[in-house]
Each structure stands twice: as structure tokens, then as C-alpha cells.
Length: 219
Image (cartoon, rainbow, N blue to C red; front, top):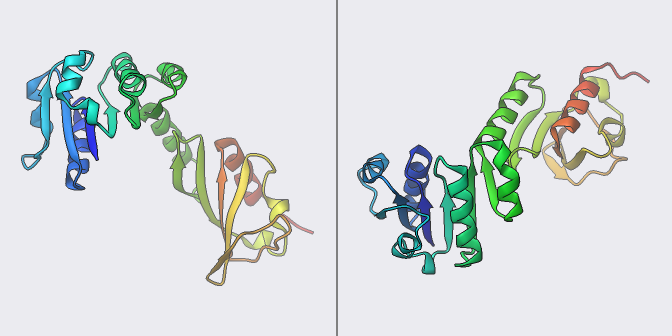
């Protein structure tokens, strides 16, 4: 892939180096030449000094042949504009924007851009880690709005059905593993102690599930 990284701060430099290590052709753009010092010494991609809002800079970076562009500068407005231009003018197939201020997310989303919000995602993860740990997060989609969780069935729910345990709307079972074999469960699937359940859920849904698991469930 030909990838352009806009911004060579800590995130931009790390991203550019990771892409370079995986064999991609990487061009990094930043207005400050000394920002390229953030790149590891063995980075062999291209660097372009200049304001990414200038189309001449984008052309020098090779945007006409780019397969992907990541806008990760500290400015949400610059990220939004550059990404929108890459998407709508140059038709770059894959465009991703880093969001700093959550209040800017609606702007990015209005442009139809893929957004990674370090602030929103970080706050979500810290909030989850403050809660009980009997349910583990194993995958986060988007900016944490929906995540994949894993938990073991406790004694109190032995013999009950999956439909009784899970909140109906904000939790959806993905798989159930019993005795080392996974299957796609139904709401009528009977639970046994030690079964491992994977499910997708919102934060509200997983909080509801935590309450159900922590409370006694008797016939």
C-alpha cells in the first residue's frame, strides 16, 4: 500500500514506522522538519515538510497514488479538512482521522470519515476497568460504542437459559464454549458452570449483565 500519514507527532511517527515495518510505502507530512526526529533512525519512508492544507504539499506526498491516508495532527480542524479533501477530491480508498476533542466527532462523522477518538475511547476503557473484572473486554469496535466480552458462567446460573441471563437488546451472544467446543448459541441454550460465553454489547448492556451475574439467581 501507498500510505500518507499527516502529522509526525508521537502517534504519527509510531503509525508510520509500524506501516513501514510491514512493507508499506509510507510518506509522512508535517509542517515542522524537526518533527521527523520522532521517527526511528531506521525508518526509510519519505518525508515532506509543509502544511497539509496545501494541495501542492499533498501532491508532493503522492496523494494521487495513495491507497490510504491517516490524518493524526493535533488539530481536529486540519484533520477534518485534509481527510475530507483526500476522500472527496482525490478519492483515496481508505481515510482515517484521529479525533482529539469529542465535540469535533460529529464533524468528522458528517464527512463520512472513519474516526478514532483517543479521548472518548480512553475514557470508556478507564471507566470499564474501574468496574468489576469478572467480564473481560477482548475487542473494541469503533470508539468503544460496542465491544466484545468474555465471561465464565457462575454456579448461580447453572441450568438456566442464555435468554434468561442476557438483556434482550444491548447484549447479543456471539458464541458459547462448552468442554472446549464452541457453538452458536440460541436463547434456549442451557448454561453450565464453566461455560465460556462471548457476546457483543454496549456499555449499558454490559452493566446490566454485571448486575445479573453478581446477584443470586435461585429457582
